[in-house]
Amino acid sequence: MRAFAILMTLAGPALAGSGLSFAEAPVVLLERGVICQVTPEGARPAPETEKGVINLISPGRRVDVATEVVPAALGISFGIRFTLDQAADPMALQVVVTHPPMGPRAVEVESWTTGAAPGEPSVSLFTFEYAYEMVEGAWTMALEANGERLLEQHFTVVPADAARPVLAACDGPAPMS
Image (cartoon, rainbow, N blue to C red; front, side, top):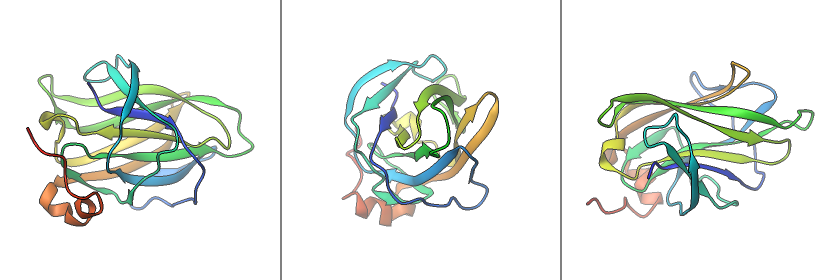
């Protein structure tokens, strides 16, 4: 099953993106980085993804390692934690993930919708569940509304050995099969 996650979590301190990453009102980036382990609690259709579904994760999950460098290791999740500023109205957002060619169809762009509301943080993630998903290189996770890009967060997926501090924080990668 495709390993995307959309969830509501608790509020936390704001983090500024780096490099070419940005967030524009009404979206506020709270965290970006790696979550060591997630447990899906269901799934929903997402026809514009490689597998056609995304996983749903229980509320309350926060980023374990604030980073833009992601180890290509099974079980590792990475993404963004965000909210809307207090003056905004609730809105539907399009999550757009771009990455190097992946899978038998060489998919490079995947997307799905999520809701967002002021003061209610959300997380959108990608989890490496299968070896073919662990494509190294530049990845971007973005949020769009009405055709306008409101948040763009860049990640670099590297060989697992090149991100040892992240794996150490996660107690090592999941076993490969």
